[in-house]
Each structure stands twice: as structure tokens, then as C-alpha cells.
Length: 278
Picture 1 (cartoon, rainbow, N blue to C red):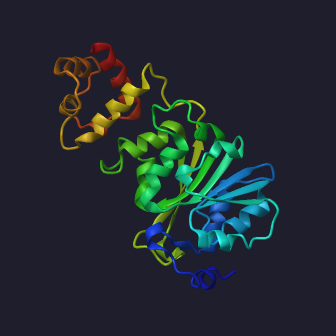
Picture 2: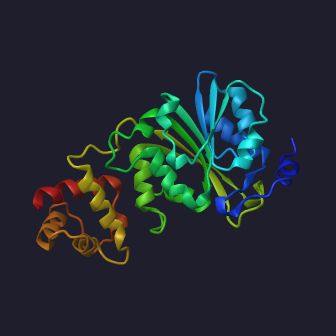
Picture 3: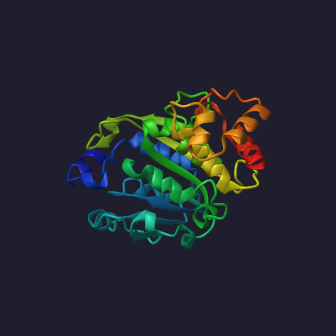
């Protein structure tokens, strides 16, 4: 199937971050990773020209394709099947709970809105009853390669990779880096490589905490000023110096460490102890 010849007939819209996936092997990897059965309801975000969509409908019970671009909506409307429903809407304005329970997400998303889309799918770390997340069992995403590395990063990763996005994603999902996908797998070719990642969504958060709003603020403090040590970073976001010093001492955390060297579990322990010391 010549995806390139089909894609070159259309002019991609830069303002929408459109780059059409034309690599048949990459499409097969997305499908294999998604592990879709005839019992599954799939929501595809940004189906574009429908190259993945036309395979999804062969595998799933129902496919909802959420697409913002009217030209792309017209194109995927040509897929003749009863189990495809096209939703002409912005994914960030779409309530995913309307599609049912235990839905699977498949998405080749515009890179410039990756973080907002992940937050929309999973909710923030203090969003304990997010109705979108509660409806999702699994997410398979094509994202920028550098973003994929951030999604799976931890405290042992290069400091620029481990950050707020890492914590958000891992707080609500078990994440697997599946495969790097080169820029030539798309038309037009972007300037960066991509990667496929798989998120198995959690029903419960990674940590059981007494106050998730407080934890969110502590996490932001850990990453807010990467050049400062953990002590000064926490003081800078408004916590009392004596409480910060006492907390770090009680947890045997060197106050000269940088926040991004703490694991998510350690950030949780820091949050709980600091809250009790204020």
C-alpha cells in the first residue's frame, strides 16, 4: 500500500502540526502494540488521512475518530464501514467518557500540544476522579522522540529529561517505550524523530498521599529552579525555611541536591513530611 503517493496529494497544514505517517511498518507496530480485539472501543486522536483508521476498523468493535481539520474529516469519511464514527472536534474539548468504559486510545498527535493532550487524557497529579482517565484502559501514542524520553525518564536520567511531564504520566500510567520512528516515516518529514509509547492507565495513583494538592506544589517546586538546590527551590515556592530544613534533615536528604535527583516516591515522602512540619 503506497501511503506516500496517497499523502502527497494533500497539503499538510503547518498550523495544525500535520505530518502524515506513511511508514507501513510503523503503522503495524502501532496496531500490534494496541492489541485491539473485536470487543474493544477505540478512540483515535488526529486520524489525518485515515491510514491507521482504515486498519483499526478491521480490528475493533467501534472506532471513534476525533479530528479537528475539516479536510481530513472529509477524507476519512470515505472509509466505508459501519463501525466508524467521526467526531469533528478539538480533542481538548472532547469528553472521552461519552464513548464508554475501558476504551483504548490511539493517537499520532501534533507535537506542540502533547502535554495538554496528556493532561486531558490522564488528569493532573491531584485530579483523583478524572472522568476521561476513568474511561481509558490504554493509550498508544506517537510523540516526538525527545518527549518519549521524558515520559519514561526517572531520577537517574539526564536532568533535562526528568520533569513535570514524567511525573504526570507515571503517576497515572505504567509507560513503555516501544520504538523509535525516524522522520522519513512521515510526509512531509518533520525535523525531528518520533517514537511510539504505550501507557497502561492506572485505576489508582502511583502514591497514596494525604494531600495531592500539596504534593503537586512540592513537585513543581522540585523542578521550578533546576539550577538551585532542593532547599532553596522549596523556599522559593513559599515554604518556611525552618520547615524545609527540618524536613530534609528528617528524611536524610542532602539540602544541596537538586530536586530532579529525587524519585517520585521520594517527592511523595517529602510532601508528606513537609506538610506535617508546617
